[in-house]
Length: 333
Image 1 (cartoon, one colour):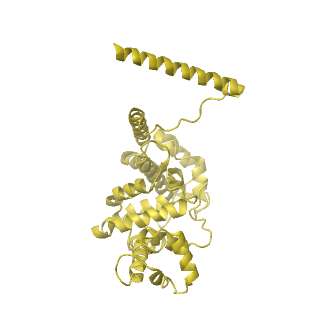
Image 2 (cartoon, rainbow, N blue to C red):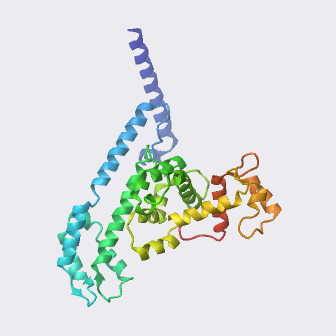
Image 3 (cartoon, rainbow, N blue to C red):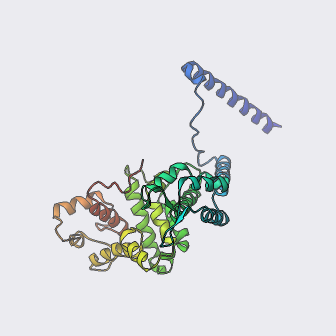
């Protein structure tokens, strides 16, 4: 009975305080009566109930988003419908479609596909078409697949953002990349277990170098998607032919040769094989033209361990040296 009385008293006191604060807000400015609440701060760590509720709500939201994606059956239906409304077939067996037939296709596919197949998309793809007024149906189909892949990637990234705040820190991104490696065909088949953590570490550092400009130790999921970095990473899940595989080695910054190249530079500099780089060892970086003043300053601003640089810190240094000019490739809005 005493416990119940205490609870009632605490509730009454809380209600009085809330009423008092509410009155203060009303008196503060008349606009507070018209502008709705637009910021809901995340629950505090000790508020376990609200945290669990928010995680569950975020999970259900992502499930709803995933259900809106095109599945394999939807994509097969799209391809069959495109083939049925081909406008012209070239001598090289390329199947082309004009705007009128494209609109017919849009009217016959499902609602989920219609959201992606806009008139704007047709004219966007026309910019790279070699056939005036016509599009290769393969280009339409491939664009839809890439679009679905990016949306899947965004949903996948968001699932590592427990509270749905739209950000990922380094450990979140590490977990995401580690979990999708089995799906990256071009990486999975040639990745040694002993090298996996170095591969993941290099990717995470590259993401943060390009996207965490303010050094907040977190990056927005929206920026990851819009930068094009996620598309490059997910492109490694395709099974390329020999020509495409060779092209990926030089153009995809997440390919195995690209990451191995960075790691081998680190190993070549580590002359005493202790897993760390001293100033003397780092002085041999590149053409070996780094001055002692530059190295002193680099070791002042970089995180070191007993005056030596580990692989993670070397990655920050390496990416900064490789991208001294302003980079617009991965710019975000």
